[in-house]
Length: 151
Image 1: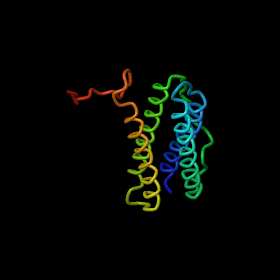
Image 2: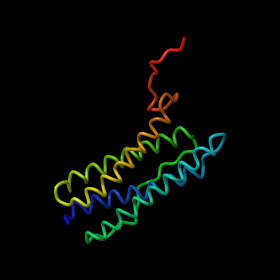
Image 3: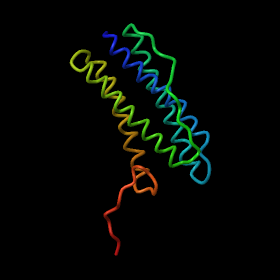
Image 4: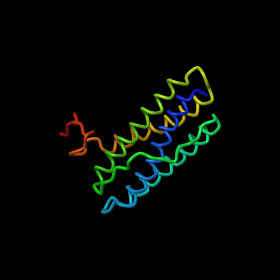
């Protein structure tokens, strides 16, 4: 396989390793009334990132490459809204990374395309999920104005 594809897959793997640490940390530090709701969500996201890392790392090896053990810097906060915004930024970056490598392999390796599309769908679901949580939240970068009226 093309070294550029392996390099891009390692960029994805580095990103997924970051997600394992970042989402785990968020699950550890969330406090208050919403802890019961968000701790599991963040820890489940860490598990999902690990699952993606596992699939991508195995694919890199199968293609003759060496999977990276490095990760990107972890963004941290103890503010729930900021943790959610960090998660949204993370998921959006994942969508971009998977989309980039898909363009590189489209028409060249159908099984790899299917693998990447499956993960891309999960990443986009993460963007959608967090966007809906943050929608109309005061102070959120995702907040929008509601057009509905009551009465």
